[in-house]
Figure 1 (cartoon, rainbow over the protein chains, first blue to last red):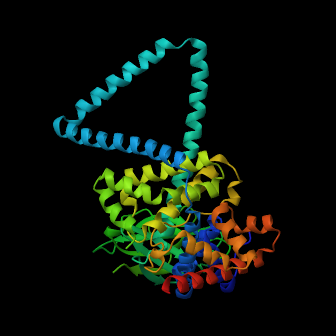
Figure 2: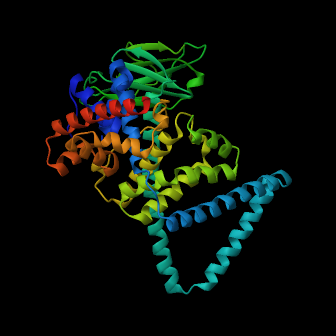
Figure 3: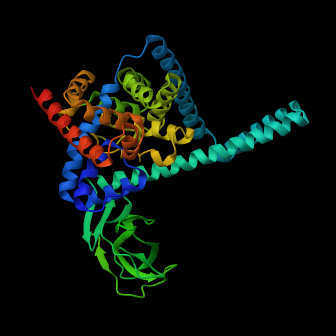
Length: 260
Length: 177
């Protein structure tokens, strides 16, 4: 991968990020750079507007048959979903949840027995193989979608104008809604056999709880999402710890940042 | 204000009529992005269904700003998901998703239309325009752009940056006339 190595090259890559042509790892690196650099943020906002506008050029007439077919199919699904929502909300108001559970279990049992009776042994074997294959593909697909959704949320949070940013050594702590991120762009590699570890202190407390461990890449970049509810956290810190992490800090923290 | 924003408020209140109006107003854009990125009308049709069903089932995902910018990014990201799941290109050649929030909230840009954008694109030197269009709709990384166009990577970066800047200027001038 041709990763940018200095500020000028990073600035050049801001346009690539705005256009959406950077691979994931490099996009995360540039997102961290943009989050930490005012000039880069300005350039990004300017060029992103131009990149977004390009989508308009795809707005062309769709042939009427396709357009009608798509609309018919979609509106049928939406009307069905809407009537289901209405019926569900009425029914849920009328019956406790356990009755619904029993009803669904009964329906599932009936469907299962009908399917079982209808199939011969050979077909069942083929069906089982096909179902296993579908399950594997569905699991792979949902894994891809989960990772992509997580990436989207992280990048969105890092760049959001309403995010709170706290400057710390080698980077920024970004807080948005109930989420906290560390975006480091110049973090030195930890000593051999050691990692960085995040710590969080609940609001109104000075006792820290251990959080995730991490290490920067070769360029000193690390983007870390802390698995905590930001609304309950009063301060965050980072220290160097032995691989595997510690239950309490064993070295002087590289920073302690109150989240005011 | 982008009319999609008002319609989205009504969709969030489960107004089927508003959803239908939203579809009428924006399906060409979503279908067009799908068609240019996936190359097949059937895939573009599926993508359009998926994007609009997502809008109906999770309208809270839209958190303000320009609706047209947001829905374009949703459509592009979804098309990238399709490219990944179909392994049309190796994963390493497919770029990261675009962040969804805060896009195109500039009031000037909310008055853009397809013709204005095509006019602005036509002001770019052909080598810049080709890279920018292939970059946005091709679903590939800048390294792959360099390979496909047989252009050095540094030149690809410079052309995209210069092209986007010219594009921004051209659009700014056109809409403020």
